[in-house]
Length: 225
Image (cartoon, rainbow, N blue to C red; front, side, top):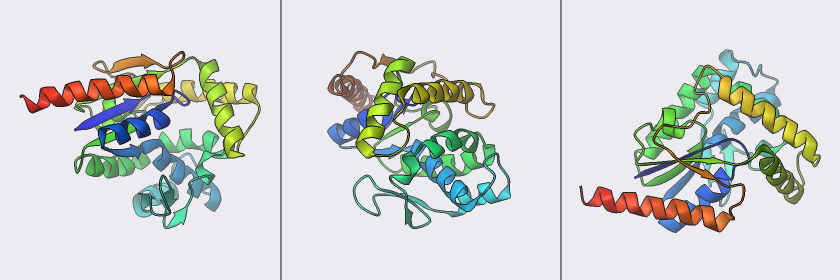
């Protein structure tokens, strides 16, 4: 069974997807971390973020792994990048990198292989529209830009990384929303059959409970087909 969770940055995708997967005893995959890992590697190596053979080679040839260096760890080419991919620089770099069609093709191929092998909660920006348009359950998480910026601000403070200027974070989120929604390749849009959940005034537990209830209902229906 595939549960696809999409939505803009700061809507709570990673947190609730991880908790929902745990509650359902499904595997969890953060596809955004994959694009961030490629963006980080490109920044580190001084590679053009707008595309080109060197950027595409990273996506095709540098294995991205989850959990190799401990729970929730992310690595690319054997190098742990768990915290490094959450910086302000990567926040800015990931949009042009993820807009590159060849990079998306390479990472989507990996995502589909993983998703077809197990029950999974997969989150990102195009899971229900591009990666798995036939997913058993599609969720689209959203929240006001102000709420999302405040969440990202609190995350940065806790991690001790990135910007701690909330206004700067808000401006960056609004800019990224515009970029991701208007790009030619796999733009951020809500799938027609997705269930929209506005997380602005909901607790994490409330959002997780909604997703788990929906997933269990779909699972029960599939068993009786």
